Image (cartoon, rainbow, N blue to C red):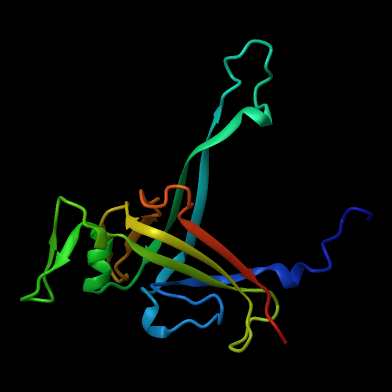
Length: 193
């Protein structure tokens, strides 16, 4: 079976388990603080970076479609989505996107029709990576979404004898102050002995 094989490094290069969503993460140390976990999820999390391309040779006579020298990325849709099973006021405010927590009543979340700079936040997804993924020197894959905003809205799905579900979609946004910086980073770090 010449071609029925897998790479020798397969187990060292697997991403394992559902991972966690965090408000902060330091890729230099690989340490995640429990207080930074945004909530419990169900069904895993999906991340996508979908570029939209322009083919500037498309309408040029005698130019083949998809000529690499004439292809450019014109935009990216960068998003993370999933389902929370837990919610608190900070999370609900984040899911609504344009909202504030009432200063006089911290149980009261007030939606707004106007976005504020504080509505955009950094979000990290971090998951176990490689066969060495213990507490000390564990491997990880980390995705850092910059200027993330809830674009999926606030939704609650309840059910008989079931947990409430809060679907989420966060989209990363470019900044006019730094328009050439793609608003996410990716880290892949193998675990150490």
